[in-house]
View (cartoon, rainbow, N blue to C red):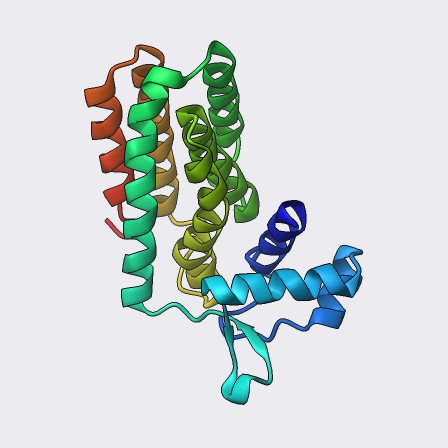
Length: 212
């Protein structure tokens, strides 16, 4: 179920769907090459979690249309997990995990200003997930999978889908470079097991606003 849920979430939050779009079980099953029963069960599970929402009279399931309050609540949940995860990662991280984080940043650097924003988003999500994984907290790791996908959809893809974000603007490229610098500093802090600095950098990253 977990593998199907992750596959479904990646598809739904890939930018192919607009907020409010219907999620049709038959079509999703065909596109993802999955049987309808596990897809139906996963859609029901995601709806119960509030990631998907019921349409009028419960006749359909739709992608959530995030209002400003919902986005704030989502970010507060993400922040709570990531700050503690960064702290725990300083104690529990392995050398292999540090190398993995560094490789992700190397790949991210190549995507700065790229026309295809999906690669940047996927890699950035992979980086934050790597920090949470290094915490060693299985509950964090499990819950963070869908939280980070939702957050990136609401923060990056919704504005892009609605034509409110200029991918080629100097502002966006500058911000991506800033994110990379912060990622690099966070890796060093975790590698040195510097809890205070790791938490400080994580707070900075999570309060960073794309429109600053």
